[in-house]
Length: 318
Image (cartoon, rainbow, N blue to C red; front, top):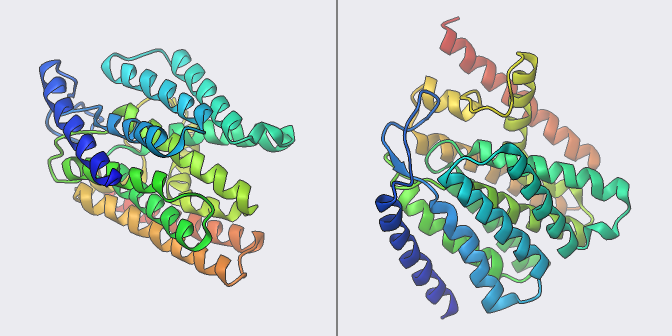
């Protein structure tokens, strides 16, 4: 009953936001770097932190540090959707939010040589996920695969309760209904992509902390490889990696090859799903180790670079 109530409230709040965003012109107008053609309401991802707050109030009331960090980062991200804030403000907000996340998950109890690199990685992850939110459906599909995987682990491992991932699945499905279409009615905005990244980081910290298996990072490998390789290419070309661009693989596929956004988003999600299934099978059969982990990443990297090269040659007509 609680989940039906949450579903109804989230849907109603999103419909109310439609009216408010239209009235106050909270829209993304297309530019030469955009993947969309028409002005579209942004900030619809505000339902993600709202859903997390509902979970906290109805089921949790313990993870106060984590939810406080989420509220802070979502508020600043939503303000950034309304008017562009400076990078310094955004960066400081991310540091504060991740610090609260680490306090809530007891990451600071680990030696500094463990939590310090993890802190930097999660700061990078939040920005990576934000950069990957560039076409219709990609954030919804990718997040859905992650949360469904977590629900599977909850069912068979019981490493955490099912209520939080289930609440997030509900919010993502509602968002997907309006976003995962040829002409999206709403975009997630920074408030959506950044808060989802924060929540994914929370689940990943809890999963690795309780199992001791870093191999679960493979659950985020598709976004990770695309983003890291793209950043390295941009650095090599002397570009500012903090400026908007259209050089991710999914952007080449949707913009230069004119593939439908939903098909590209689904391809990313399905690829990540297959990696998740492989990871779960290997772990359940006790055949997963660091050698397999790095071998899997290497194979994925080679596959990614091959696809990227083939697409680039096609674009250039080589």
